[in-house]
Image (cartoon, rainbow, N blue to C red):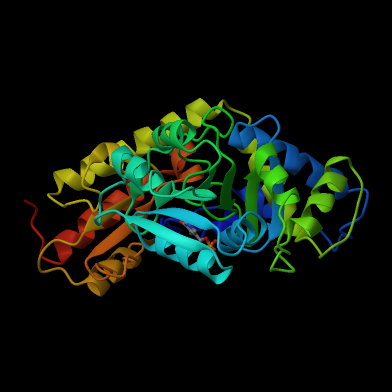
Length: 383
Ligand SMILES: *Cc1c(COP(=O)(O)O)cnc(C)c1O
């Protein structure tokens, strides 16, 4: 572990801590993106993504960019100008997805949940009865509130009431730590990024599209209002690499794909059910401890709270900067608030990836210890 010895433990909701083998696999010499040594690594990574998303026939995309690029891909490839989009908004990332859809000309209707609340199935049903929506977007975990959406339940409502509506899941803070079943739940697009629960440095936009979504893309009438995000460019690239042929549209981030390959092999080497359970257990440990300190969560209900992160209100009298700095003095980094309406009132702890699956690293204990000691030093005496 020597290469990572002197860094502050990064316990934020992404980037998460990286496994040494993931980092080592990135330090390859300059390698052509069409070299015989790289092509199978890219091809296999595409295949491994199907395992991670639990899909047989979904079409993975691995594109240089961040999670945000996934919104642009959805908005530009699947929605035509003036079509209707329903956005289930449980925080900052719902606002942003809505904004992105509007940039490409969609008519956006938002169902906004109160801070800390999830969208109810009744609200989804009511909204669906007003119009025929081309897409519905769900933020699986809104990283600004730590609220977990009931993707399975929402999907059932959509299938029953509006079966043609494409179901889009922003899984940037969920894929790899929350239960998500692409085929079984009938998801049309799930998108994520490398640096969250997948445990790879930032720089990859990762997305899976259903066969139905690909058909909708192929049948669209309006031109695709994007050059870089266009699936017309990326689909042939993904197909080529999967059939172990090199092809060029825009240079792929070779080293990041080596890292992704290593991480996906690690993740899929145990059943995903085990991984989901590990994250639930870790989340309960963090949340129970935080609760025992007398602190309050941003999510109002435990069953609608994320398992890969925890959002917590500062206790009275504690200044945001003070707590984050104190915790950093214990060599642990946690994150401040992000939701615009309450940004200075809460902090966030990430607990995803190797921090959860490799308990011998003691990351969870370290963050709890740093938090507890910091609060005490700042004069907070508990409930
Ligand atoms: C982090 C995050 C994003 C944005 O991803 P970037 O990689 O920062 O572009 C989008 N949605 C959710 C839910 C996120 O947590």
